[in-house]
Length: 271
Image (cartoon, helix red, strand yellow):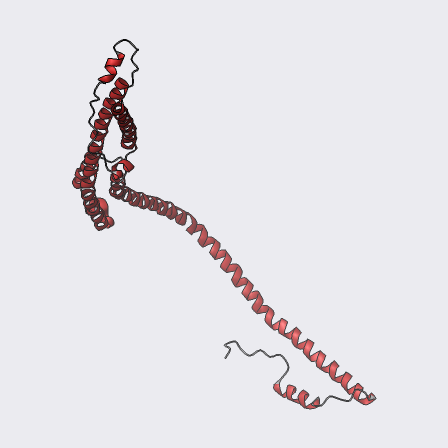
């Protein structure tokens, strides 16, 4: 129920009831008398309705004026409050921005320190990592202090990252050592194969020279020079050759040389 006082609009419920009863039935407007009654009814009701609307606006206007006055006063007070508030708000924003920047820098600094663990692992997993560089990395990470003062709310995460880095580096180190041993073996194999290949080339060169014909050529042909050659007994594995192009190239050269030496040997036997 409304709390506003009842507004008198000059039309009582009794008057409404009387009008409802008076015009309970619609007159027959096709007759002269009925049309006259209808015209009078419309005129009376229209006057009452327009009078009601005029009275409504008249009674409502003070409230509209009061509402506008309230709005205007509220705007005035709001402007005054904002004038007081704005410099304070702006000063607060400057400080908030400064604190936000400091917080972002603090977190970025911690994250930068924590990235050392992952970056060290990334380098250790690279192809050019050496056992020496990994040993240095293990020593560096092991001596890196992880304290609450430095890592703050990331302290536990930093401890886990450090342990993870040390564990993985410790796993990688023997693998790299083994890789270096295999590489050294391959280098030694390449050197041995190159030496063998050089010896084969000397044999081929020695026995491929065509000597000038002379009186003793026939006698010499009866006693050809003996080819001294020891074939390679142990060859690098197919896997080792597949993994090392230099080793495979030397092996291919040696295979060609040995095939040619076998050809020379066969030729000597026929002679």
